[in-house]
Length: 80
Image (cartoon, rainbow, N blue to C red; front, side, top):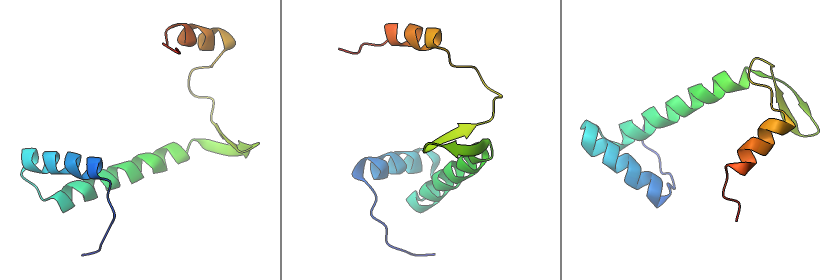
């Protein structure tokens, strides 16, 4: 299907690089990337149980984020 889209130049450049490397058209590359992103989004959305104060609350099947974990992560970041 043909359509006109505004695609950021950096995204188009990356798609062209993948296209050249994989010997597929840019359209096919962008379609595949969009499809993969949409499928991934659908899987992650399935984990969301509800919204609280505008934040998505996900199921508790992952790592618990504690104040200690946040402190350790912040210490490892260059915030300056």
